[in-house]
Length: 89
Image (cartoon, rainbow, N blue to C red; front, side, top):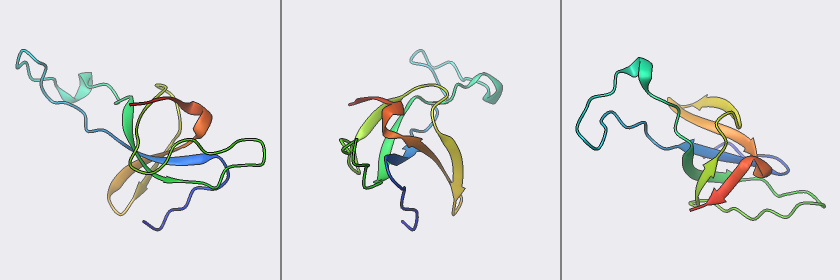
C-alpha cells in the first residue's frame, strides 16, 4: 500500500455492499446504502494529544457521512479521522 495517512487519520476499505437481503430479495443499485463498516488498511502516527487506538486489519464501524472517498488503483477507500470511527468490531 503506497498511501500513508498523516497525523490522526485512518485509511479504511469499506465492506462490500450486499446485493440481496436475508430473504433473497435482490436490491437494485439505486436503493443500495453505503456500508457503515470496513477494514482499517493503514493508520497515521497520531498526534501529541491523541494516541492511535486502531491498527491495520481492525474491523470498524463509522458514521454515515464520515471520511473522504478516495480511489487508488481501482479500489475505493475512505480517509477519515480516528475520532470518526465509532467502534472496533
